[in-house]
Length: 284
Image 1 (cartoon, helix red, strand yellow):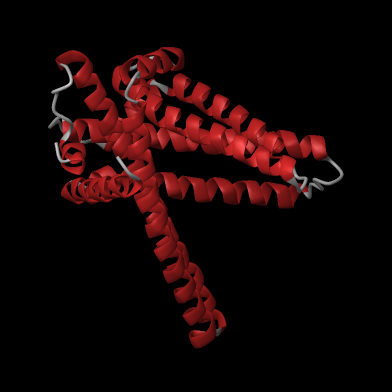
Image 2 (cartoon, rainbow, N blue to C red):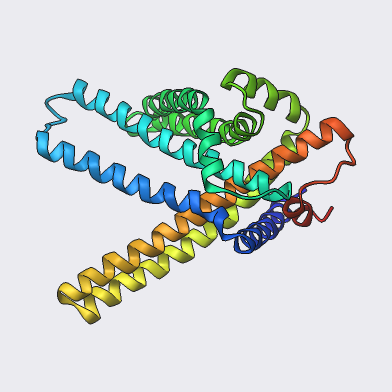
């Protein structure tokens, strides 16, 4: 199973995920809320830093603590709204009613597990930054490679554990054990799916980035003035936010589908049908 085969599967799944989303647009809402909440959260931190006039060079300890708290908060927001997406994708695939309020209640019910997931992700983030270091040279190259591997592995694990936490209402330790049991011997499929979906998402991201650069250039150079600046920020920011929400939704939809399939395989055997979007992507 080569790289291009993986990319083909990734492209097919993204089309199926979008089809699922446009069939029931409510599925997109948590991802949109996530982007909006993150923007407000970052703006609040920037305002706080400006108001307190913190000099991070002189107060490195304070900066490190604030950085860790900020990182934890961003992970907490991310996992909470992604947990809502898991609930809603699961409901849609099972033929049940999709409800934002029910998804919120489900994520809130599993809030403690989400908090622990955010704490561990924060620790992993701090660890990988330390491994990368700031120095140039071969050592930093090795550090970046090792840090990248750790981040990739942990990212996949979190995307697999979140469906276990939300769908089965279990804690993070049980979720990790559940994922390990469900996907033991099936890591190739997980890796190939991740590679394909991520490759296509990155390609689309590159195209969107070029489009945003074009919009900003036209706004500032052609329109110019205050109107051009407002247009650049408004249109460019909106395009970036929409693509970010799309990318987040697709990835979580993939891992939710994969998890549901793994559960069926465990119960029914290798011939168990995959959820429709994943089945079509894999041509099963």
